[in-house]
Image (cartoon, rainbow, N blue to C red):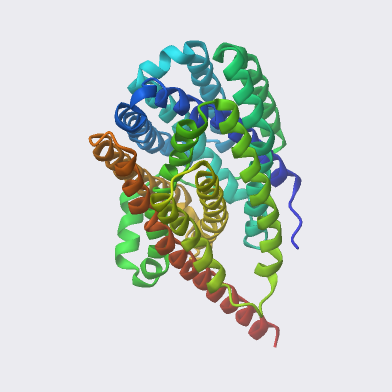
Length: 417
């Protein structure tokens, strides 16, 4: 097992603290938007959620594009700190407005989009600069496990606080989290490549002309597009939990339980991943099919127990998809020896995800027109159909990475002879 460096551990901590902040906006603010119309959750509730997320991802991709120019030609760490500060400012605004902001849905989504747009372009670039290929999968595994540890404790606490008080009480905690994030950035060391600048059209030209690189990286981008639909999986869990259990405390409790089980499975999967004698394809296929089966059962039998089972299978698929997809996403550009295009690669990846996310929430709008849980069930199955395809593509990504690694090992052996 590769040992992570101090700077990598610090960046993982920064990301984990970011998860704490995002739990507020991506879980509990959404639950408030859903419950603005408690008698029409599958009509106006779905419509409001769709508008919120479409606004979020539309603004995110625009701000990501703009910030990427500065990330690629400036000090990455300074921009990461700026991203933390901007995110703090916007999240405090969301906290201060609280329930009132949930009625200004487009503005709420736009604020979340700007927050992500300032943070993630610099985070992804710094992450790639700190991660070597040999520690890449270890980094993503630890980050995913810590993310789920956060989700064990924080959701229940947040759910309780929100149910018994107001959003404004959380402002001081958000500030403390952001200050810790800011302090951790001074433990990082990042080196910008010489004469680096954001040249998106040049990157597209490279992909057009280099057939080998295009054929290898296309699976990463196809996976990115399908990964965008994952956002909807989490929102489906939120909507169904609020529908069935009514309270944010229940939402937090079940989120925590799902995370505990996911952590155990992630740690266990590491042993399987390191065993070269085990065929990994059945594992990918099971992870792809599990939530789809859960969705089909949910359509046939709708009760609290089936809802919990669906939430669990979806959460497991979400986390494994994030872990496995992130590892291959980070490795491919280095394996192609085109690291000077790192910012462009990350932007294209995020843009493709945002396109499919917007498509997913346009489908939410269509489902909301029927104002029926049955229409919502059909939407769930349609979206979950993407999951098996995504895991098969991730398996193909894995095979490509192993091909690169084997070729490099052969080259080293030949040089040593």
